[in-house]
Image 1 (cartoon, helix red, strand yellow):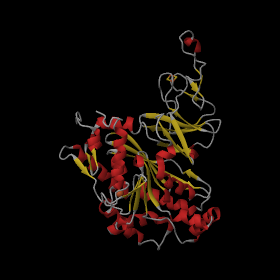
Image 2 (tube, helix red, strand yellow):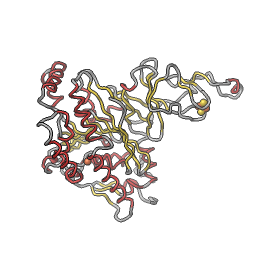
Image 3 (tube, helix red, strand yellow):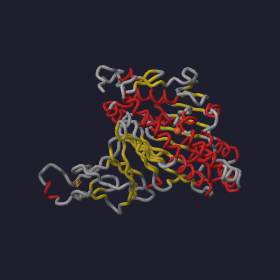
Image 4 (cartoon, protein in one colour):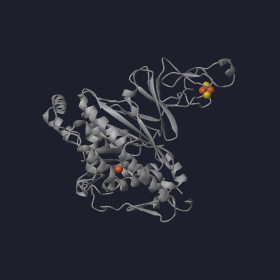
Length: 438
Ligand code: FES
Ligand SMILES: [Fe+2]
């Protein structure tokens, strides 16, 4: 599709966006530079690298990176690219180096802060101008790194807002999940990984779409309702069944969800399912939190029921169930989602069992609800690929939002305020200072 002569700014209007945003390969390339190349993106959690030399690998926009704990105890985010001929230094998803990274191609070695240690046959470089002893010829570091209460974010751009200013109100969701943990949080196991055959933005929009569940997930909800009847009322391990059943409720339940939207495209959505129970083990957990935080604060933490917290464009957290989904765009019609589960340290086992049940039931690649969603993402992408009609309509509840200090608040769950906010951020990232990119 040729976008020549069309301004990027005009593709996002207050009530609609142009279909090319989802299917144009040129716009996708530009998104990698302008959005994923500049925003603060989630890298990993500090519990994945507990000891010096521990590392994980991931990808930020097009850049493969290594998150590693250095000997000084600090976490570094290095380019996973040998300074010799460019080979990735670490090819596995996680690991440990006793002292140095060794490149598998010609054996250059690097410390865990990226500095160069040595090369084979150093005399080959004598008189060439390349100084083997200069530690600056090491692995590059990602421009900016911020460790927010254990959650490591990075920006590939040297310039831009500081992390906490960027994330704004979305940090309330991260705080809530961390505050639910008596002794901090840690990653549990490896992630689920899925590749969706659709554009990355379709996934993020769907996180805050509260009209689709009752339609798309009808059959899953019916199945859950039947299955739930086989368990005793309030059975703690079957929170995912409860979640599915609620999806089938009448729309007025969904309308009660509250959504807050912030600058740079982020959102929080509150309401929906709470993990709170009345069984002895759960009540014992609440007692631990009251002991740590006092009655009032503990009640505040437990009753703040965030369902989705999004730090646009890379992270969607479910604080009440300790799930984190990370968005990695691969191509204009391919999106990798890594789904992480966290454990609240110091909490009784029941808390983790509920989170695990939710992970398997609602977020694993094989569950019924995700399959419903993936099918709609695929169909949306396919439908938008053809030139039948140019616009996607996003005007539900438009004009009824409350705007306060840059926060757009809606008390009607079906509002598309989040989607509109995401695209306003998209536009801001994509256009140049002079207002147009072309
Ligand atoms: S590419 Fe790494 S040592 Fe040559
Ligand atoms: Fe859904």
